[in-house]
Length: 419
Ligand code: AMP
Image 1 (spheres, rainbow, N blue to C red):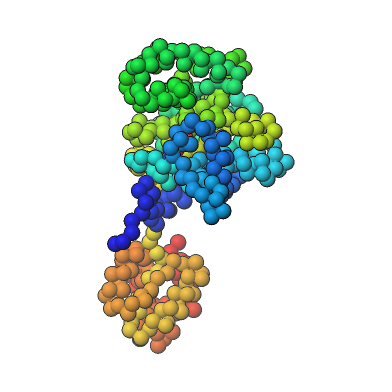
Image 2: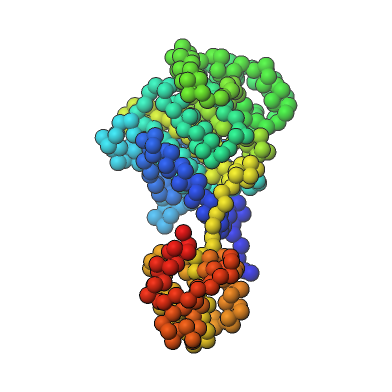
C-alpha cells in the first residue's frame, strides 16, 4: 500500500459511523428541546480570529494550529475549536436580530496539532453549544445541566462534574499579581513549562501535570477565593441553580481551562475511566469574547464535548449502541436470471427494503453464503420453475422456512415478514 492516513486522524468505518449517528441524534433531540438550533461554520477561518479569541499565549495558538497560506497569500487556520467561529458567524449574520438570546449547537470536526495518544487526536469531533445574550447564572447552570443530561441519556454514570469561577476582567488582574508573586517566590522549583506560563499566562500553571508543580501549588492563592463580589454572587447563583436541578458537582478551585476567553464560570465533566485524557467535555462563560471579535458587548457561554472521548467512555461503560448493518433481502438467482434479480432488487429498494443481489455470477451456494454474511432476514430465490409461474421463493434465513410468492404480492409479503 502506498498511502497511509495522517498521524492523529482516523477513518470512521460504517459501524462507528452508525454509533456516531446514534449519539448525534440523541444530542440533537435533547438540545433542540432546550431551544438550540444547528449551525455549521467553515472548516477554515482567518488565522487572526483564533489568535485574538483563544489567546496569543494559549497552547492552541502557540503550538497546535494548522495554519497555512492560501494561493492569495492569506493566512488561514483549520478550525481548532468551535466557539470563535460561531461568535464570528453570530456577528456576521446579525443573529442577535434573529433571536435574543440566540442558542446554537454544532457537531463539527476540529484540528489541533497535538501529540496523538488515546483520546487525543489531531482531527477530532466536538458536539458543542453556544448561548449569546444571557447574563444570569441560571443559563450557566442550564448548559451544565444540558451536558450532564446528555451523558445520562446515553446511559453514562461514571463521571464527575467540576465547576469553578475564574473571575472577570476586574478581579483577575489583581489575583494574577498575587499568583505571580507566589510563583516568583518558588520559581526555581517549577518546571520549565510553568516558568514560561509564569511569563505569558500564569493561570495555566494549574493545568501542569507535573507532580512537583502540583505540590507547590497546594499553597498558592486560588482564583476562586479572590474574585470580586459580582463574580462571587454569580458563582453562588450557579451553584444554587445546580442544586435545584439536582446536579451533583464538585468545586475544583484549580479548574482554569486552557482558552483565554473564559471568565466567571468554567466547568468540565471528567471520567475516571479515561486515563490521562480524562475530560469528556468542558465549557464556561466568555462574556468579553464577542466584543473582542468586534461586536457590541454581549454575554456568551457554551461547552464542547469530545466525540471520540465520549465513544471511549461509552465503550468503557459497555454502553456502545448496538448497530444493525444487516440487510432485509438477499436475492439468490439461478444462472441466466441476473436481469430478473436486478429488476426485483430495484423494486424492493425503491419500496425501502435493504436489498442486495449477486453482481459476480457466483454459484447459488456462494450466494446463500453471501446472504448469511450480509445478515439478510430473507433470501429471495429466483429459479426457472418458479419464474415460469411468475413467482419467487422466500426463505426465512433464521428458520429456514420457505414460501412460494407471486411477484405481484412480493411487497406485501416482505413487509409482513420483516416487521
Ligand atoms: P476544549 O475545546 O479544549 O475545551 O475541549 C473540549 C473537549 O474536546 C475536551 O473535553 C475533549 O473531550 C475534546 N478534545 C479536546 N482536544 C482533543 C483532542 N486533541 N482529541 C480528542 N478530543 C479532544
